[in-house]
Length: 385
Length: 67
Image 1 (cartoon, each protein chain N blue to C red):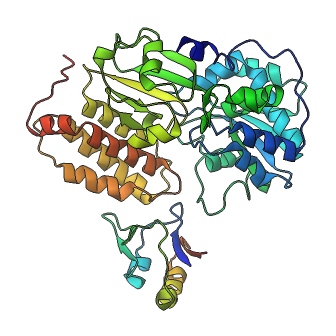
Image 2: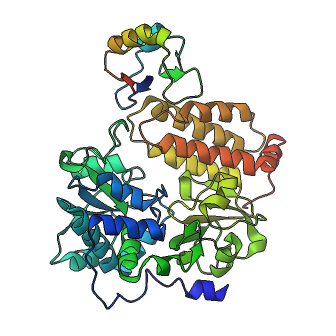
Image 3: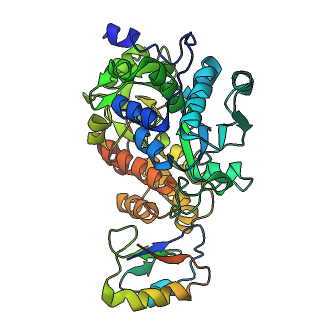
């Protein structure tokens, strides 16, 4: 396993010495398709298809480093260590597509100075923007860049038809851009040398825990797709006896039970309705009550609503309340009430915020079903005090 | 043809659910709730007239027919 890990030091290492090649759109799209790169910002969409969707339309290209997920720190680290790779990625895509503008959008947690320095003398405009959980959603980001409130739009008109300045707009995550800058220099075969055939390459994972002694080395790691989850946890110095679950994919993600033999790939994580997403791994410590922690997350997510869509505004706080009642052992509440409210927010908003929250709550109820039963009987075996 | 709710516009007036009860009801807060499993439910030919009336009746133009 150690060879797998040392061969993943790609994104955070020294800057490449040789210059970025110029590629025309068809060459770039073919190269990225061969490499099999998927978006590293959460959605996991094939990058070649996103490029193809705006090719020939002189788009605006936006680098997304909003990093609104509180558990994620990988874009901040990437832009502190390797801002040149992200700027290169934007320049590469911009030149290939004949982009009208190249914008690199930085959320409030991203260090601006190294990025501004790296962008000097390039076509990349660095914009410092206010953040929030949904601010990195594509249409919210487009609205913010156009001077409107940074809230999502109805998805009927996708940003690749009409986005920034009313132009077709391509939004790519900062890490995706850095991966593109490396693929352009090193080729598709190099990219595929780590990872699995159907899910190649590396990704940046942010690993944190709910307890102070669960992990010896929390933080950001570059790991290969296909690495077993337990190996990733060991690399971060996890005390596996303390682990009662891992939230994969962040607050919109899903839980994986601690004993699961699961690989960090799209296909294998799908067994738990999880996905690598933006690479967030939250390790639940045995002293943390999963329901209390889930209720805190649901409360946070309710507070991050853009307050546009009725079911999200009305339903999410009530869903968080119901989870909080369930988290207090012996409080009379029903699992069916949590399920009912979850159903009332799922799929009923302009953006994926209610859907992601519903997925997280469904996973909590499923993976911690035995713990839910304890609470209904007035007990909880994770006593933090 | 499908019926689509623009949630950024919808204020829960409820006219659509009254005019198109075959596809829409209302939730706890008066917002349209699709009776089936689809996010944007399919509108059959026999319901097309009712669907068009529901779209016209929405005071916030939050309801749309989409392909």
